[in-house]
Image (cartoon, rainbow, N blue to C red; front, side, top):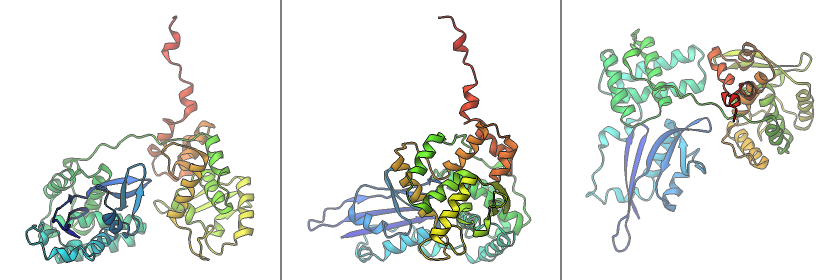
Length: 401
């Protein structure tokens, strides 16, 4: 049997278990959590010593997966997953032991209990107005959810304060006493601060002085780039026609995952050899040249699968192909191709831009093709272009040895 204590502090869960045997020996174990970005998604790492019973509980959480690279289980970093994990644990047989073990102290139940998942009445109206404004501005569903989650973390921290009394100093305090103290990632820190800034500007017409708030330095990491021969291997190892067409189209047009899955039948203009991408990131439309070989591949694909609405549909007719499915397709193709590099589906988009640059395409055109708002975003590909680097002559070659 197990006795479980749950401490829920926003996105932090610690579960302590006492295994009670016939001899009353106990085994205490903590689940250590950490926010991370894994394969382009915000996830929560769950690190604990092996225990089959605990694994059985955690695997019931929707979206829970094992990572071979991180060597741990991880769940989606959102309210739904946190709520599901708490529900599964509290409804397990272990909960029966909770009332029978008064010697073990509950950890601040009033502050971190299940009822604390929504902001207090002081904040509810402001939050609803802010979400309504985001929807009115046509922010994407993912952005709205991310801003909502970030804002709720901040408002729970000041659950007993009215919005009108919160100022710049309170945000600085939250930054140090919550984000930095709990060692959350820099990307998460920026996301919360951005959400809070926008919230106060919209709801209170209050300007947050950003210079006074500590911000993490943006990491300057270069994307992993595949050689064209490696991309050929990935596509050739993809036997299924639909899967091959999807991976080919991402690389051929430099698409984001969401852009591929949102393509409709009329997105392909075969007469002008163009792909029409609508309502992409930033609510922008753009046109991308479509290779003739891809058009031929799509014609063969259409005759075989006969999609009704979306260009790529799932198992059920007229339903969009899922993000998790295309990611799995890519992982399997990479494995079959024998590529050991740490790459994701988004790597194909990076390769598209880098290979265009290496073939002499102007950076301004690449910016338009990728749908980048700022040229600074596109300039990263100047640092990963192998041909540009190859032209640089090392001073070592001038030595007469």
